[in-house]
Image 1 (spheres, one colour):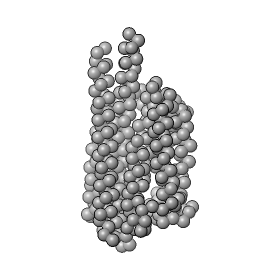
Image 2 (image 1 turned 60 degrees about the horizontal axis):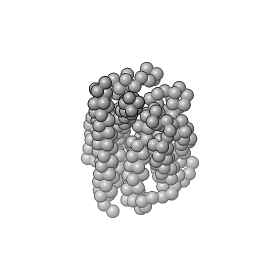
Image 3 (image 1 turned 180 degrees about the vertical axis):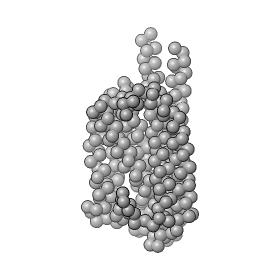
Image 4 (image 1 turned 30 degrees about the vertical axis):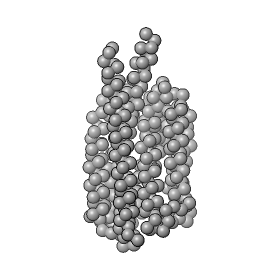
Length: 43
Length: 241
């Protein structure tokens, strides 16, 4: 059995999950902090 | 720890270090994966499929480490009433669940060419699957918790749930000792390793890299939750006139 398709699938899945989690966390923080700064600047 | 109880002080440290942890982690992950895929020699028994080790082990480490973090946060929340502990617990849950899922998926993919099966209901795999369900339960409980609107974190009930769930961690760790399993025994202890050093050093890079990256994601989530808190507090003040 050729092992490389399994190795590539495992690394590909991990890369996808890592990128998706990074984008989700980064965008969530950036949006919330920008909105908070915008609201607080009205004070 | 109490020095960081003030969210403003915490943010003054968290904001600059997030970027360093994130990009430092990504650099170590890429270097470790490259070395694991192209530099480390093939295993004499498993051949090339052993290379899945370089993502499977960090995923297992962070799946279990994430729940250890939840447990520490729960203790800090329940015992010392640390204001950021509940926020840290809530921020750790999703990345912890993601890594537990990666561990299960990569282990299953590794199992097919090595054991001839995608899944086996043995102690290690079943207790790891239980950890994923515990994470999902924690996330659901945290989202529905009554305290969230006030603190941004999870409720005391959710913190107690984290403490109870921690009982699964020694079961995962010792499952390969207690029960017969297709899963291999412990290869690395605090003092020794049965893995040859030519195969071990890329693992050190990926474990360190994914750990840095995990810390960065938790810090980003905590920053988002604290910002949402400020927004909610501001909107409440506005609605009162």
